[in-house]
Image (cartoon, rainbow, N blue to C red; front, side, top):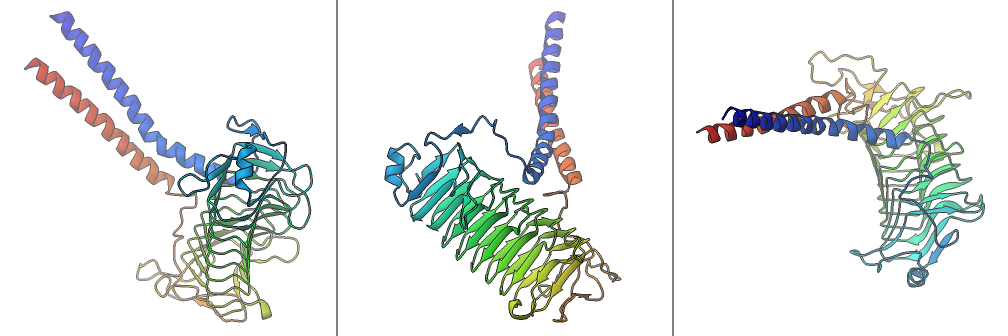
Amino acid sequence: MRRKVVKMNSKAKSRIMILITLGILFALAPIINNNLNINRGSSDDYNFNNENLQTSAVSGKIHIDNNWTAAKSAGICTGNGTYSEPYVIEDLVIDGGGSGSCILIENSNVYFKIENCTVFNSGSGTYDAGIELVSVSNGLLINNTASNHDNWGLYLAVSNNNTVSENVANNNDRGIVLIYSDNNTLSGNAANSNTFWYGINLIDSENNILSKNIVNSNLNGIVLRESHNNTISENIANSNMYHGILLFDSHYNIFTQNMIKDNGFNDFGGAPGFYIGAGADTSHGNSIFLNCFINNNVNAFDDGVNYWDNGLKGNYWSNYNGSDPDGNGIGNIPYIISGAAGSQDNFPLMNCPIAQGGGFPIGLIILISVISGGAVIGVGILLIIRRKKKRIQ
């Protein structure tokens, strides 16, 4: 009888140890995942040893001009071009050979996806890019690396209703551009260290969504030229040589929950973190609120008629000198914006509303994780104790 009890106790202890281990892993999982997500966006390197990447079977560059059926027959893609079964180009490494674009899709309105491809060494011609879409709709570019090009990383012209997500376009002359392109979504991309002009640029493009992109250490971060009614939210634009965000003749755009930090420090007199151009290039009707302006050379400059709060809340300014006597989180005096327009933020925030580490604050993640992991362990032990009592009875 005693041996049986000892055996049962040993089994119970083993189960408890397993549950504790699982609980710890459960607790740590969000922290690990959060760190991975933060680190991915800031990487300037691409890895040719990724096991998911395979050398292209199509001997170099891809050019599809509304001839997907022929491309499928040649083994370039799979799928049928429908919403549920799009054409798919994936897992390729393509050397552009120093001329033209590595992947060029033209005159296409079927559903397609380009995924997990690494493209490099495109040409230096006017329109050459890692991936180029011209007169294209219903495309999805996801998790591709288009870095180290002499011109554009990703180039979309006259292309509507496409999604560009989780791509890396670093160390090019220019990162990602939309020209005469409407109703596209750019989300979760990294466009860093593009030193000739910008990370992301919209030219004559409307009703696009730019969200959760990282544009650091470029000449300029996000640039809008003659582009209207776009939504720019939750992006990070840090440490760009001139401007984090730059507007020329662009109206009725919304900028919210963006981090604009450490921009405009250069050897040519400095520049504002958020710049709305003067003269013929000025912009009006833009709404800018719930953003964080931190330690820019000049936080913002406005020569147009724009709105720096939403009527209830404005932005956080690292050099704001007001106070918050009633403790409602909003400063007691407006923040004055540089520039001839005489603009001001009427409801400046006392604290930055954006977690600067990316995502939720790490302390909160740890607390939630520990509580969740402890709950898993506690429930498991309780079930074992109840089972043991039931056997004794």
